[in-house]
Amino acid sequence: MNNDSSSRIVARLKDWIAAAAPGSKLPSTRHLVAEYQASPVTVQKALRSLTSQGLIESRPGVGTFVRAYRTARPSDYGWQTAALRSAHAARPLNSAAMRSASNDVIAFHSGYPDRELLPERLVRAALTRAARGDSALSRPPAQGLPELQSWFAHELSTSMPVGVTPPQPSDVVVLPGSQSGLSSIFRGLVGHGQPLLVESPSYWGALLAAGQAGVNVIPVPSGPEGPDPDELDRAFEESGARLFYAQPNFANPTGAQWSAKRGEEVLRIVQQHGAFLVEDDWAHDFGITAPSAPLAAKDDSGHVVYIRSLTKSVSPSVRIAAIIARGPARERIMGAQAAESMYVSGLLQAAALDVVTQPGWQTHLRGLSHQLQSRRDLLVTSLAEHVPEAHLSNLPKGGLNLWLRMPDGFDAEQLTKDCEAAGVLIAAGTEWFPAEPEGPHIRLNYAGPNPGAFPEGARIIGEAVRKLLGA
Image 1 (cartoon, one colour):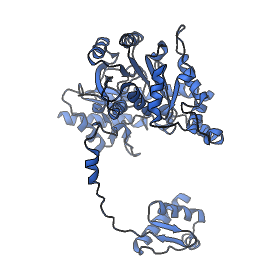
Image 2: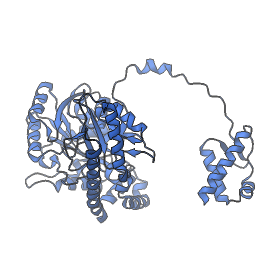
Image 3: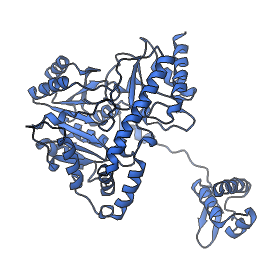
Image 4: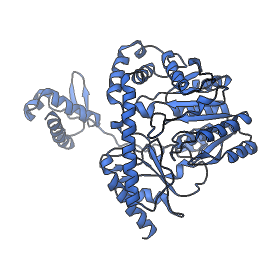
């Protein structure tokens, strides 16, 4: 009722403001309470809404007035063209996966899971407890809270076989999200103008970070089983690269998971070339029919630089991730990270640690696995019925996405526009390729909102596909 009354008062006052002269004084709160038969709280809420919209301004001790507007002079930023020169990175700064969506569309485009798939109760309770603790007011250590460092190190060590030395908490660097970590790694371990090997296709954010770091990206073809070992060996040999970025578990966008044998082959090649493997374990918590099996668990000689993120599985507002790196490489990464952020919010670190150490966290992950499988299978079934033209070469065992190959010559960019016009958001596969795409693809997120609309969304996609094919 209060919300309805507040909206009614806002609408009426907007009419009054439109007819009033700039600087006119609004009636007093007491007068508005009597006029609209509303409580003072409701009237104040309406006035705050109008203030936030820039329509009125409050002058303490004097009253509330219609805000005076002046005709804005167009700003001239022409001087910046000469100052900035040519752009250093040609890749777009914002991915289609980061677009906001209204509630009336069917959203398959996002790179994040829907809110109902997050441990909301655990997060709210953790933030409340963290706000009452010392972490809310104290500056944390630059490398992260010791307890959180220990948790990340222990989690990786539980996957390690006998005979492999587990990482120490001091090997862990806590980050404000994995994107920040990728930038630091590329700057610290590769360097401007130097070669970087990357799976193709690969995570668009890694390609963006590489572009901003000024490194020379060299694509290595990768399929449902991972990169071809011979192609990877040849790329190392020809380029002289010393770093390979990859996602061995539930890769974004393809959903591929390397076999144990493929992982051992890749690790052997990396070691032979005296190089680093940057393992991005972004989907560690999103296993469906198989768990994430970190390749870092088989390496104790410092060849694997491991990135583990909690942002997508805990909350997008709790941007916490970590790098586990051994030896001088860790110091290089920390040096690059210090140039970007001195330390990570202690409040968010404490909240993240609270969530993942609660008994309810493991219970949540088990339920999440079942929910993701149900959503994945529903979308796969719907696509098979309504979009037979889209080929799914790999049913992902985890992650959030389906990677679909479209017919040769198909215009995936136009498909995204046509689908959006029809109320369905999808992502064309172009931005996941470090060079020219090997074919037209689309990526669909099965962890988005309203899974009940998946069949209808697939039907709309199918109609748009057949329209473009002239069928």
